[in-house]
Image (cartoon, rainbow, N blue to C red; front, side, top):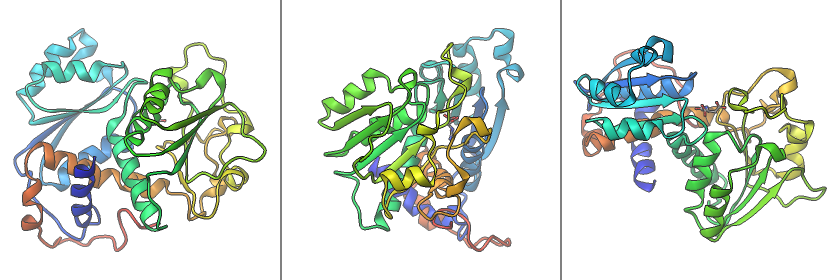
Length: 323
Ligand code: NCD
């Protein structure tokens, strides 16, 4: 985790378009997104392109030969002949591990059903580290509040696992009872010595939290649970943040946020609040995914030597750290 974040920091000039590089010239990424995606798919593709590689993709199960009944194993073997690395999103838990088993080239999990979303967790950790650095805070010993669909939200599964590698953490897990965090992940965090508090409503006088990480109800994954949107208790808005947070609290969401009024997802009344880190968070997907590609394909040591000035006009304030 530290290695990936260190390389991501070195790649910030590329993410901010201050430098260009071609360290992955000639390499091909196969991007298979068999489930809906905007930021993960485009940021994987942009990250690979910004390192000088080419991206070939297929989107949606119906447009791939898996709709004709092709197995994961055959698909993985075929793509291995076309590309040097794959990024895969698939609706079934465990499917990406099956791809990796049959593939002759490295495979990155871009989300497998309700199970895991490891690259999102890495960019979330990077975001917390960077946001805390501006507040003179450390992750060890901090208090993280997870709010929302903790059952089907894969981002919170992967993030809680990674956060439990830090020390002396407190995790508050606030979710409707039907959507609570899987017991195996709670047990892992407890086994690693952290304090885990599971709630289905906020107390009148809650402890201050350092991070509020909220999620969308994964409506497409519900299995009969009668939940259309959150009750207002789970609605992260200015009043909620003032209730549990302080001026240094960081507010995060993997996005997309559900804009249907009844969804009670993260409120737009926080949009001008400097504590809202959601777009700095999405920006950081680029350096993190570039770092993964550079490390996996063995070019991380060549980065700085390869830098050139962009010959094209570039935005003056792109990338992480802009608001
Ligand atoms: C998430 C996902 O796909 O798991 N989005 C993302 O990749 N940033 C969260 C979601 O869909 O709610």
